Length: 381
Image (cartoon, rainbow, N blue to C red; front, side):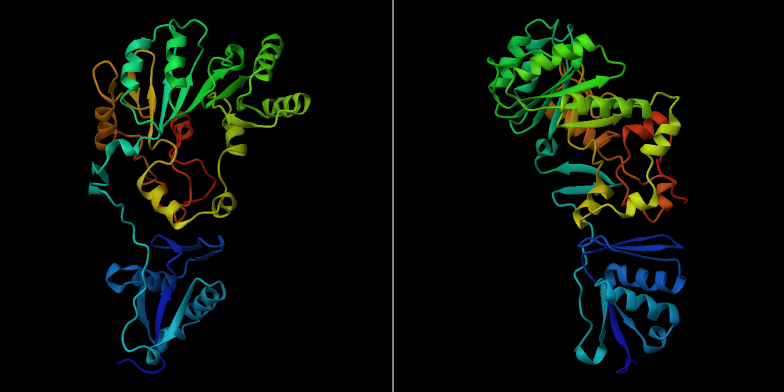
């Protein structure tokens, strides 16, 4: 029987709750504030609240509310604007809270796999085209003509010895899409004045550098009125120090560091790439971010790689999806959604599936594959 001393307990719809059998974390997506608890009474209260049949609201009896751990938890919850209690006498019936239960529209789900998308090519956002002197440019263009116009196209590799490269570049120049020339500083080619429509450069730099080729690439880039960024591939602290010197000496404004695992520099990764608990909980995330990480790989989803021989991959570390000489773009995308291992690779394996920070961490990356570990963090599970 409900009395005037009983309450309805609820949490706010913008709160994400991560929970294991022995630990719970509440994350406020408005201000990134968190509450953590290992108290069994608190965990059970939240478990009841999150059951779909309870619609985000459970009865909190006066006796339960007076429990020291529950009372302290609710006071902290209210102080951080993450939940509330409502006297039952103020409501004619049980209130309903619209919690953001995960529901991905436009799909049917079996065993956490996409089986049907309303517009399958709408899932495609980026194609990386790996080019060398064996690439069949005519067949490549024929395949790309069926791709959506609003994609990002990355043209990867050295174009120096590619026959009919001008035919390919002319094809891309006619497209309104974003085109990114991904190449080493050793192989930069001039695009302007012939090609001007939405091209940019992504220039990789490996150490040690060849100063003559470095200076040559600087000259080419300085003569182009196109956006560019440098991607420095670093495998050690010494590489990072060289980046600082180059950035300062040549006044490089746009650049980023890309850590490279060599098989012998695990310590460098543990120091600079592995996440700490502070790194994880300090990230600013929305409810949409949490849902994304529960359903797709934020690094791979929507991306396809085309190799010089025509083979298509979602991620080059995973099995081939098809070949552009025998398969259309629709078949390749559908195959990845139905059978692939890249776009839907999430943190649902041990030890991540037993960790309260499971969906705060970024999706599994290529580093996990290279290093051979399912998680790259310092969190004790």
